Length: 462
Image (tube, rainbow, N blue to C red; front, side):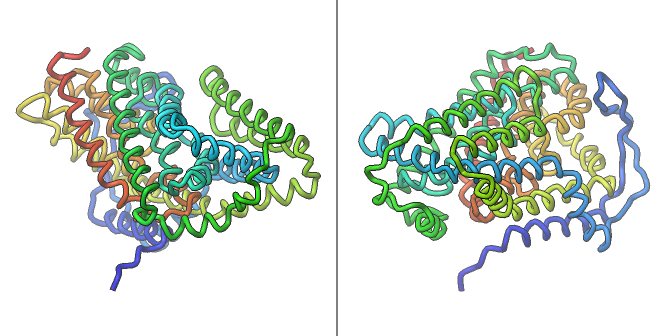
């Protein structure tokens, strides 16, 4: 009898219940904090146990709605962007572009060879420079159908933008949301050490590209190897028949709509990098794009509203998945066990050699990342402790920051990350299916991170 993979909602709620159960056994604890430059930073020597707050059945049932409230910003972002993309797709400009790329992919060896490396590198650069994270969600709606049209699978379509941005975020060299904040907290000049970080980013991006190209080539040759083979067959039936549109070319209206989309993406990058835009501004930008696209595409008021609402409806399950994922952090935080777990992990860093100490820091940060997925939030919680601890175990603070960064490479694997489960829900990939596929790559990332932490320790990187 074949083991059936549980539904994503069932899996997340099971994790939520396990964390609630753990609150009855893990004592409550707390670090004192102080305000520095508008950020609450932890006082490393201030840990003390507090009265525990076990989370019972009522708290467990209330956690999803609390998660919905705390994740309301990203949920609203997902729904608005989903509606905007539904309007964009109604114009058929995206379908036309995908068919054009598919034809070029068929006839040009250069396009076939460069498509995955170029796009993964671009998304990785986005993660490494302006902290591309939630912004990757809209691209799933483009790259999944593109991958299917090119003979790949849903996993490839998700991986190009999602893994690209996540590996860039974790191996960043200019990301203000993890590198900048962590260096500021650790008392290290902001964006210093960029030389070695560029090496780390290049290695991590190359490893991701090589793995995806190897996998995509295998799936293209034998589609049955894909873990989403059955799902892909269903999706291909839902896609427009390519033979019907074989001789159809892009019209001026299609070109105008795609130009508006490109301008929107450009404005998003400029806004994030130059003006500090976040989810609110980006959502407003995509809503404005949807309105203008509706006019240019001549959808009419009724057609525009119907398309937008259909997009929102399609992403309603994704919104609930994100809410339950956030609820896991709510339960742990309300029980006051996050600081306790951090305190208990700290003694594990001490080692006979600084190299091992740095590698242990990376492993601990990976564990903490299961509960805290915000780069800035994790930096604010852990770096006030890790920075002075690094001094004691003979590891430079730059290396401790790198260990913190590399710990975020586990994000694409963990089911408590709102971005991860949101992306997977959008692509209709069960988390267990994705996790099974990710295991080899995650092990590669593990070995890569452990090796990349050796040179900075040996050369006294400061």
